[in-house]
Image (cartoon, rainbow, N blue to C red; front, side, top):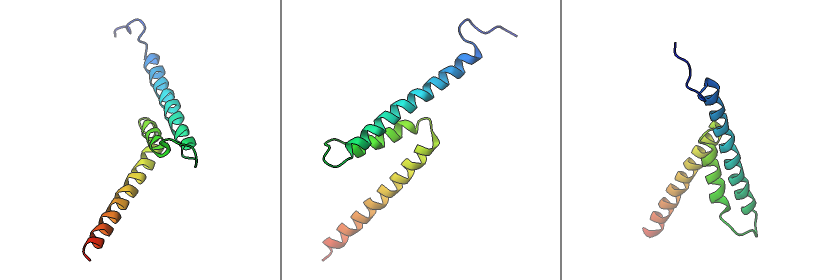
Length: 93
Protein backbone atom coordinates (compact mmCIF):
# COMPACT_ATOMS: atom_id res chain seq x y z
CA UNK A 1 0.00 0.00 0.00
CA UNK A 2 1.51 3.37 -1.07
CA UNK A 3 1.52 6.54 0.95
CA UNK A 4 -0.64 9.48 -0.01
CA UNK A 5 1.17 12.18 -1.96
CA UNK A 6 2.15 15.19 0.16
CA UNK A 7 -0.72 17.65 0.57
CA UNK A 8 -3.27 15.21 -0.88
CA UNK A 9 -4.78 13.42 2.10
CA UNK A 10 -8.25 11.83 1.87
CA UNK A 11 -9.57 14.65 4.05
CA UNK A 12 -8.33 17.15 1.46
CA UNK A 13 -10.97 15.98 -1.03
CA UNK A 14 -13.71 16.20 1.60
CA UNK A 15 -12.76 19.77 2.50
CA UNK A 16 -12.65 20.68 -1.17
CA UNK A 17 -16.16 19.30 -1.76
CA UNK A 18 -17.43 21.05 1.34
CA UNK A 19 -15.83 24.31 0.21
CA UNK A 20 -17.44 23.99 -3.22
CA UNK A 21 -20.81 23.30 -1.65
CA UNK A 22 -20.54 26.29 0.68
CA UNK A 23 -19.35 28.53 -2.16
CA UNK A 24 -22.27 27.51 -4.36
CA UNK A 25 -24.70 28.04 -1.48
CA UNK A 26 -23.39 31.54 -0.80
CA UNK A 27 -23.25 32.59 -4.46
CA UNK A 28 -26.63 31.10 -5.35
CA UNK A 29 -28.26 32.49 -2.23
CA UNK A 30 -26.85 35.97 -2.87
CA UNK A 31 -28.01 36.02 -6.49
CA UNK A 32 -31.45 34.71 -5.52
CA UNK A 33 -31.78 37.26 -2.72
CA UNK A 34 -30.75 40.08 -5.06
CA UNK A 35 -33.37 38.87 -7.54
CA UNK A 36 -36.05 38.91 -4.85
CA UNK A 37 -35.09 42.47 -3.88
CA UNK A 38 -35.19 43.58 -7.53
CA UNK A 39 -38.59 41.89 -7.97
CA UNK A 40 -40.20 44.31 -5.52
CA UNK A 41 -42.46 46.81 -7.33
CA UNK A 42 -40.87 50.17 -8.16
CA UNK A 43 -37.34 48.74 -7.98
CA UNK A 44 -35.84 48.60 -11.47
CA UNK A 45 -33.90 45.56 -12.56
CA UNK A 46 -34.10 42.00 -13.85
CA UNK A 47 -35.52 40.49 -10.65
CA UNK A 48 -37.15 37.35 -12.04
CA UNK A 49 -34.15 36.55 -14.23
CA UNK A 50 -31.83 36.81 -11.23
CA UNK A 51 -34.08 34.59 -9.11
CA UNK A 52 -33.98 31.95 -11.84
CA UNK A 53 -30.21 32.33 -12.21
CA UNK A 54 -29.76 31.97 -8.45
CA UNK A 55 -31.87 28.82 -8.43
CA UNK A 56 -29.82 27.46 -11.33
CA UNK A 57 -26.61 28.10 -9.37
CA UNK A 58 -28.06 26.42 -6.27
CA UNK A 59 -29.26 23.46 -8.34
CA UNK A 60 -25.64 22.62 -9.16
CA UNK A 61 -25.27 21.22 -5.67
CA UNK A 62 -28.73 20.90 -4.08
CA UNK A 63 -31.77 18.82 -5.06
CA UNK A 64 -34.63 21.12 -3.98
CA UNK A 65 -33.76 23.97 -6.41
CA UNK A 66 -33.61 21.38 -9.21
CA UNK A 67 -37.18 20.39 -8.41
CA UNK A 68 -38.29 24.03 -8.30
CA UNK A 69 -36.63 24.77 -11.64
CA UNK A 70 -38.27 21.73 -13.23
CA UNK A 71 -41.68 22.95 -12.03
CA UNK A 72 -41.02 26.46 -13.31
CA UNK A 73 -39.91 25.09 -16.66
CA UNK A 74 -43.01 22.89 -16.94
CA UNK A 75 -45.22 25.85 -16.09
CA UNK A 76 -43.42 27.96 -18.72
CA UNK A 77 -44.00 25.29 -21.35
CA UNK A 78 -47.70 25.19 -20.42
CA UNK A 79 -47.98 28.98 -20.74
CA UNK A 80 -46.19 28.91 -24.09
CA UNK A 81 -48.64 26.27 -25.34
CA UNK A 82 -51.65 28.25 -24.09
CA UNK A 83 -50.44 31.43 -25.78
CA UNK A 84 -49.70 29.57 -29.01
CA UNK A 85 -53.16 27.99 -29.01
CA UNK A 86 -54.80 31.32 -28.18
CA UNK A 87 -52.97 33.09 -31.01
CA UNK A 88 -53.89 30.35 -33.48
CA UNK A 89 -57.52 30.57 -32.41
CA UNK A 90 -57.52 34.36 -32.89
CA UNK A 91 -56.15 34.12 -36.43
CA UNK A 92 -58.74 31.64 -37.65
CA UNK A 93 -61.62 34.17 -37.41
